[in-house]
Length: 613
Image 1 (cartoon, rainbow, N blue to C red):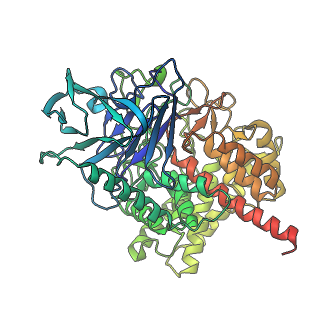
Image 2: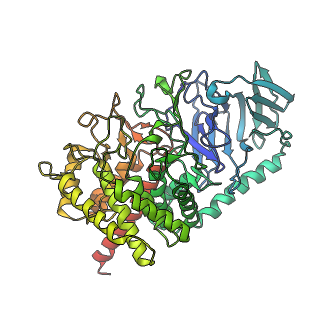
């Protein structure tokens, strides 16, 4: 067995406060609890020896035909791993009951239901937790033949089995085996808790079955709220479920990705912690969720964002930090976990994110766009806090920053940061005017127009006939694919079409899009990276609105072939089509949704036009 399965070789299950990755071999090799950003219990994805895992799989003959397949039950977050061999066919269904509540809990339950549907199969269980990213020792307490508890620092993990499994200690870990015939079932239940309450009550087979059905019902009912009826319903539904799974229900804050430390280049140093809420990423998700009809999720994040605006500034004096923990805590101290070898040796492994202290002025544009999607920016107090941010921005917009890609190679006057500054004032002016809100509209208008002129004069490179990454370079940047979407210029403006053509030549490789060329625009890091999935879907949307529909649809269909076996995307695509970076990534899935909606609208218009309708 490969010590490190491919990043894409996983499905995700979660309860809307935490989530786990399950490989197609039946191994839980990533689970942080009780929150997404908590220390890990299982992290063998970052160190196969020290990270910890829980494997539940069938014994398949090595010398005979055997197949393993993994899938989601349709339109749910129930993940099924099927083991098919000449002697029998069985499956493990992994799921977590959704906790769709505003109340955080320290207790989380992951169920692994086993059944055999034909013949006979042997199953083995191997549970080896490693608390606090593998740094903390634990002790095993065997309660009886079917249950045990692992004691870690401030955390307990209960393991309960149902059926013929008999737990056997292996040092401070446990193993078990059983044989099931057609029609027979078993289950393994993992319950994490930080409290000193009683052990969870053992479940019966009927209760496990009811719990699974309840989980299916939740997701089916939730998806009925979607208004999407387009050509790619299965794909869009999967992306919507993924975004929901990556959102911390008690606060409404979505995280950027489930994992930390997965490399953008295997063996390289571009390994970051994405288990936090970026103002940029989360704000862009608002439009995708509203377009799908999930207004409650969009409203919950906007409420979280309003609270961040109202909470006041950062130590540096800026009104907003670029990212926060899911509960709004701004402290994200970055540390190196040098006891972990990293995915296939990709070190260092970082927990926390030092980029939280960077200056990235574009976040005010994304935040303004999200907050002004509906009328209630926050009623009277919320509007005043928002207006205060724009007043501050009017004094501080014209300065270099680190930019959207969080480069560590020094501050620049990034064109995208100026673009989103323009968006901030544009949205603020529109909202104040439409709803008669008190604002210094004259000053905001003056600054908005000054920003516009500066972008046109300094962000435009005459030699390249394109808008460029920052004012001191001729390098292109795929973040500017958002220019037409935010309304800065028309998607058919000659200046934009020329920029799009230049990107085709420099950043696009068989419909896959690089963020920028790090060799031409040093970002302070060694090595390279793959194409960026977010940018590839933004490119498809830009092609769509530029009227290049055949290219856009072909590029979209090709992008879907890079999804993994259950429809999930990581951050990047490597040179051989492999998925790279943290997984699954919310940015990618929200951009997929936006691209699908845009394509549907334009294809429908083209079809009506061709039919004379």
